[in-house]
Structures are given as C-alpha cells and as structure tokens.
Image 1 (tube, helix red, strand yellow):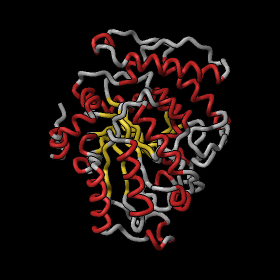
Image 2 (cartoon, rainbow, N blue to C red):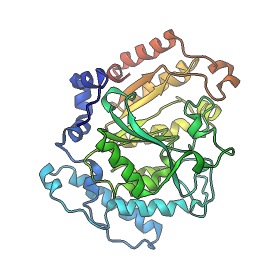
Image 3 (cartoon, rainbow, N blue to C red):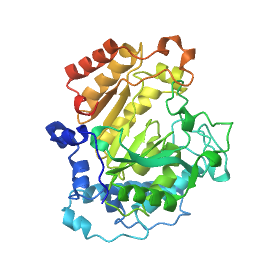
Image 4 (cartoon, helix red, strand yellow):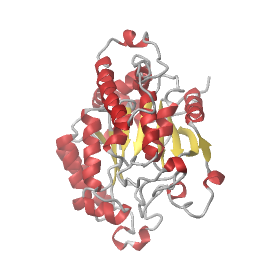
Length: 370
C-alpha cells in the first residue's frame, strides 16, 4: 500500500457542510457508494449504424440522454447490476465526435478544419491527441487532491498571459509535437487513467492546454476505463453546444475557467469572439442539465475588477447558485503580457480582497476551496 502525505485542507474541506452538500455525488463516488456517470452510460444500449446521417445520430443522442437521466434516479444497487453494452451511449457519442472531426466544431472558433485528413485549425491538433504529462497533482483545489491530471497538448485559446504556454502555445510552428508529447488513442489514454487510479487518484482530471480539441479521444477512452472514479472536465469551457452534448452526461465534476466578465476583454487578451456569452451559456447548461457539481476558477486580473470579476460574480450568484468558486490570486504577467501595460503586474492584495469581499456579499461559497 502506498501512503501519501496530503495537504491538511484536503481533509478539513470535507468537514464543511456546504462543500459536502454541493459535492455530495462526487464525494459518494470517492466513498464507493455511488457509481460514476460514465459507468452508467455504458449500460445503455444504442442501436445505430455509423454511416447514419449525422442528424439521426444527434437525435438518438438526445433520446439516450433522456434515458440516462431517467436512470440516475434508480437505486444504486440496480445500477450496479446493469450489463455493459457493446454498442452503448458512449460509443454513440464517440461516433458523433469523429464525424464532427471532418469539419471540426468542437470549440466555438468553429474552424471547420477536416482534422480526419490532418487539417489543423487554431489549436493545431489534427485527429491525433497528445499527452504532455500525467501525474498525481497535489496542488489542485483541496477537495480534488490527489488528482489524476492528464495534460493535453494544444489549446483553442491564445491568452497573452498564458501560464501553461509551454504546452499550449510555445511549441506552435517551432517543434514537432511528437518530440514533446506522447500520442494517445482511446485505449492508451484509458491505460494512463487506470494507472493514475492505481496510484491513488480520486478523479481523472482532463486538462491542458485544453481538453476540448481531444473530445473524441477522451470520450472513446471511457469505453476502456473500468474504475469507479470521478471524471472531471478542467477547461476554458469555450466549446460549442453540440460538443458539450457529447460529454455533459459523462462528467461527474466540472472545473471550468471563467476569465472575463465581458466579450471585449476576451477578444483583447485571448483572441476570442463572444467570450462571455458562450461561457455563461455553457456554465448554465452544466448547472441545470449536467451533474451540477461545479467549481469555477476565476483568476483575478490587475485592473479588471469592475469589468471582469464583478460581472462574473453577479452572474454566478444569480444563475449558478449551486456552484462553488476558487477566487485565484496567482495571476502573473507571463508569455506576452508585458505588451499590455494594464496587466503587466500581479494583482494587489487590495484587488484580491475587493473581489473576495464582493463574492462574500453575494453569498458565493469560495473560502473552503480558494
């Protein structure tokens, strides 16, 4: 048996009643009293032909989503006794994802690159997925550690202050991706996940870069995973509604970023159109239709309290009452941030206090996980 020294707050966080109430299903998976959602999905039979028109497959996906959500109210013992189907809900979602690759619409850039034929959009990832590292992360939010993090190469954003630029940006056009990352398919990705489980992970944490360009590989890997473990989506969350439909029922926990409180800042610093509108839509959907167990990461940026932090907090308080937030003060002027005078510094303690004070005033839970 491997004994690991964990941060004290990874234990004490579960003594907080609000955290226990809001993350009760996630905690139940950790304790083994509830099945991870992807295991339930594998028991749903789907009869289809991969050559069926995409519209037919999308309609079937909606039907199976309804069936899945009806199963969630069943007794856990009944769910454990269900048989894994060869052609199942996950198989259907993977088939649709691969079809989307022919004219990629995973993220809201909607480059429509034919990634099957190795065309590349903004993320510069073709049909193949690449993992830059996978390990037990002890530096995540306290309720997540030890987290089985899988870092994917590439990103659909171009943040000028990117702190993971070595795997999301710096290699673009300069290095052969296979020299710096491991190519994975669904089966080998599942093997990585299962090894992390064996090492003591309490979740499988898909991150990057960003996992969005790799939806097809991640969904496909779920048919090869067998452990009862939380599936966690850690992302900038700029994915299309159709792409979100492919994963919304399979993820037990959501760890999305929310960077900007308006569209203009998203365009200026990440090169993204309609940032706030898309992020708000996606957060609202996982809150209302997904597992609803969400920890939103908000990185406080210097000089962006009124235009970004407060509008985000207002939206969360009004529309996402079950969400918890990690209000982060770790902003550093990395990558190309020095070209933007207004963000070419760390946030001050007063700025961070102001954001946290405003969150507390709105009744947002943040202290146990920040």
